[in-house]
Image 1 (spheres, helix red, strand yellow):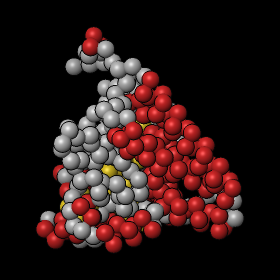
Image 2 (tube, rainbow, N blue to C red):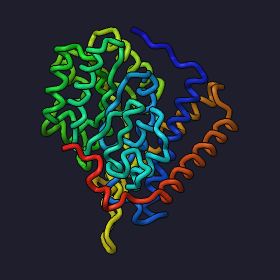
Image 3 (cartoon, rainbow, N blue to C red):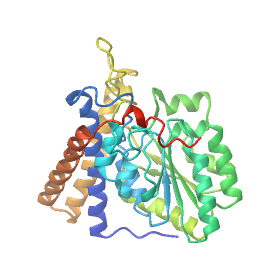
Length: 342
């Protein structure tokens, strides 16, 4: 199976979606200083993963489903969720995607095929197999895209789910976004102590499914690689493990701290924990958003003026999301037991 490169219009769409994710995440991060107290608890940002997210979800069609881990803001935006509702959810407001009940780590938008996330590492992987089994039973050619970090590949749920998915030839694509850091532990440290070596996609061999590693900073490479896995799944040939190698450009988590208490790793772990400033600066130079923009301009797909116009439009869209979220009310105490089904 081979997937053709997307046309110029689609490439501009990919760039626009990458911009939307990046700008949304920047607005979330800035909210900790611009609007202290509006976000309670952690947020985990996906700046650096935009190409992986959008390149993968470019193959999404009606009836498909996606699940992700807690670094989850970008996926529903690409699938069609209103950024105002997504931001309101992160701010804990009633106009949020989950009525303010989920917050940053638990975004869900079933209407757009986004089945949800979890703060538990690897928890969405078996859920993806369940959704894929349902899709297999319906026989409409739908697939499930399951996103998780490299740390999840150490969880039992990962191995159990890949095993049964291969046995039943479930239409699921496992996209492992390997950002090199499991909180403050590097992938290299993990491999030396407890895991199979690089590339992590080699783990697919144990379950008789294809495993492939792709440059997650190149949206067109991701588009082709995940596209082939999607075609394989739609044809009934079962799952694929895609290791998308990226670099997380923000600290593991952002959190507002009590007065006098420093933020948890305000700098990236490469600097704050390991002192690897050169590594981090090299990652910034390879930032996938300006990198893709430069490529589109060079190839003639996009003019600098058009790119600047897109930036302005996206910045306004995401500022509107912040303004909307701040004005949205908090859930009332009387509604605390609403939406509970146990």
